[in-house]
Length: 242
Image (cartoon, rainbow, N blue to C red):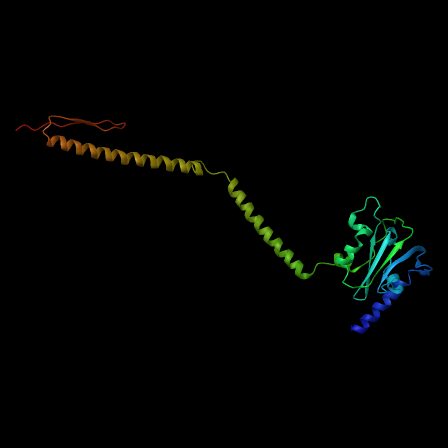
């Protein structure tokens, strides 16, 4: 489908939607939209257009005290605001924030208009919000790229959860008797302690033997040496007679 055909189809849809809305101009910048009174307060750069407003207007807008419309890419966007004294309303939904809204959300120098609702009314809950570009973007189905990215994140999460479950199983596994890490450390400590005691005993015996040799060389008659451990041994050396 070429661009001209698309444009013709879009224009036909706009005309069809506009036919469902009734708009009548009255004196002193007042107008009736579907038999509801409004007043045009501001029309910057002639932004107000009957056809575009009728195509975009929805009865759900009658609950707002003000309606702001701005033109971007030859498309009309409508935004509702409340009065400052309206109870149970956030501050960013009041008309006092109009300048901030125009600065943040409306293109610089873009045409816009402000309508005042002369008789605001609450609407039933079953009425739908008017379809705008922002609503379409919010309700748009996720693209294939975002879907692939989500699937990749899910796989990574599943893999991490699997690894964590394995670690938890290994940590909760009941070890066999005598094979616990505490028992192994205790056994190693006892074995090392015995080895250190044996080495100390060997050094002590060597020292005692050296002392005994020195005593014999000094022509001592007899000497008794004891090794200080749980097995006591007595050594007696007699001098050899000539």
